[in-house]
Structures are given as C-alpha cells and as structure tokens.
Length: 216
Image (cartoon, rainbow, N blue to C red; front, side, top):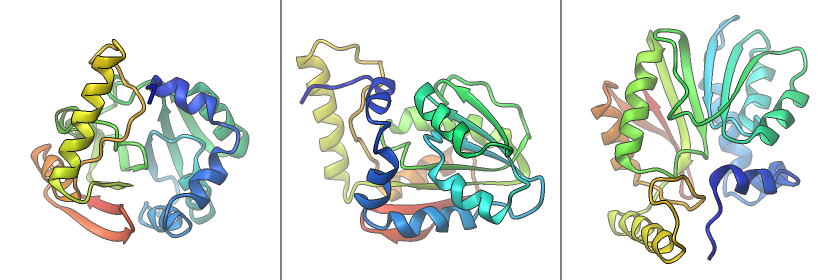
C-alpha cells in the first residue's frame, strides 16, 4: 500500500466523493442528518466545521437552520470549491489549511462539528487540537464528533504500528499527514476530550463502527 499525502488523496477522489461517503459507509444516510440535528437551531448560530470536505453534514444543517454562520476548515482546496458551489448565498467562511495550524478566535463558536475526518490522528495530536477547540467555543458551546472508531485497544494499536511501518518502508516524513486510518476507540476519544477540558463526552448514536460523541 502506497501512502498518499492527505490533501492529495482527497483532491484525487473529489469526483464521486459524495456518493461514496453516502453509500459505502454503514449508516451514513442516518448519521449525517443526525449530526446536523444536534447543531444549534438558533438563527445566526456560529458553527465551526473541522474537515468540512464537500459539506455533506452542512446540506442537512442548512435545511434546518438556513441562517447559521459556518466556518469550514479543510486541507483540500478542491473540496472547498465544491462546497462553495453547493451553498451559494449561505453565510459560509472557508479556510484552506490544517485545523491543527489554523488559529481559532477564543469564544467565537456556539458549536463545532467534525464528521469522518479525525480518525487519522494520534491522541496527542487530538489533545492539542481539542484544547484549542474548547477555547474557541462560547461558555455554553459544545462539540459534535461523528467518526469511525476502533473496536478495541488492540485494533487501535495495530493501525498506528502499521502506519509507522509503512512510513518507514516508504521513506516518508514521520511527522507529515498521510492518508491512513488510525482510529482511537470511542472510550479513548472520550478520555482525550475530557483531558482537553470538556466536562463530559457522551456517545449519542452508533452505526457500525461510526459513533457520534457529544462533548460539552
């Protein structure tokens, strides 16, 4: 298996991406609208979308709250262009970059959301991100995470060891982002969120290996 840089991977798969995500992932037809329904319904609500891609969750969210203000961050300029074409006239600000690097204004967002994006990173990387994310939320703000999770700690460890092996064999930068799934267990994800300062992290829904976690 030849690893691809994260942005190159998604840019190369833009055509057919929406169809793949909606039909090839168990429960996608349910968890996208479910995730959107957990986001703030108030007019003018300010929402941050981490790894927004082509905005699949936003299609459902704007149907519920067309007056929301959304900031979307994604590595792929091509994905963001596709998202922008979908939502002409909506209040959207798009940022092309890594959500690990993009500065976030303190206390700005009523909620944050991420769908099927964060299962590529270590607990340590997520801890730094979640601390930054928590600071960017309002006092009553919350984070909705819908993602793919490992079934056990053994499976989680296997993914990370395999990624390290592949990077070493292919002579790749060990610190660069390459597309390879390294999900944590839902329990470990919740632990990281709490360590970052969230008071609670509850599993709200489950579809195969996908869970929705609500962190407040």
